[in-house]
Image (cartoon, rainbow, N blue to C red; front, side, top):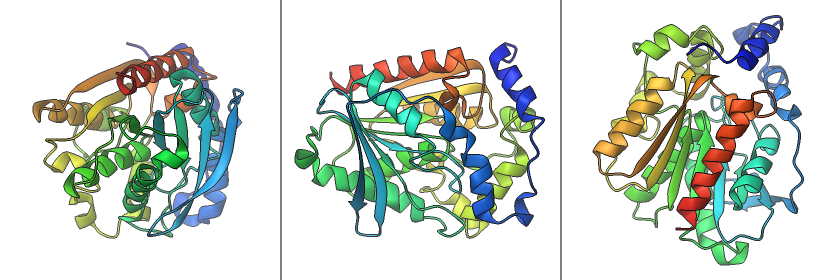
Length: 305
């Protein structure tokens, strides 16, 4: 279907914004430019919003707890940003919405970013974050049988990989993994990559993200970076969300199909007319807010079943 009119208006506005050369601009300046718009969404009121530190084996990670209904279910959230951008601040509005709509507690994790921290640091942080909440579930008021790992884009990769690591290490699995337009494997030939990598999430930006986070081309073939290359059997139930005008569309939908072929229950949702990152723009795109309500409702149904 055509690009949603609200998305088209957004793209027209973005086309007028000057973006500096990626390889000639200090990383902190780039983060200010790319992260600031995501921090501007309206913040729904939540009963409890509390900053915390996840003192894991590898690092002390900033995190933020959202609790609007004193639920014993938890969504552990990993933000997007190509493993380079993003923070608990950029996704504060989105995580508030998820807590409000799902009725679950949400903990948003500030994992370490590239280029200062190369692969597999973010994946290790994601897994260690899961271990942290699993070990302290009683203290956090969480039922360890009601934990979902969720993330968007690079964060979707982290939710998938943390689930994979838990299975491989014999750790109790999360009840659910929620992967929103996730990066799941190397792709330069799919139809979605070829047709949609000039609309918003561009080929140049995708390549730059890889160069900032990966040590070498071999890292891209590691199943803990490209989970689609792994044996996916025995993983937790999944919700995989994709959007139509996204170079990562086929990565997400192929991963969803591969999970299903491996015997994993999957709910696959494609939101037509949208672009990569649309969920964070719930205040601009009506379809994004409706999708967020639907996804959050599905999380509630599965965690409480």
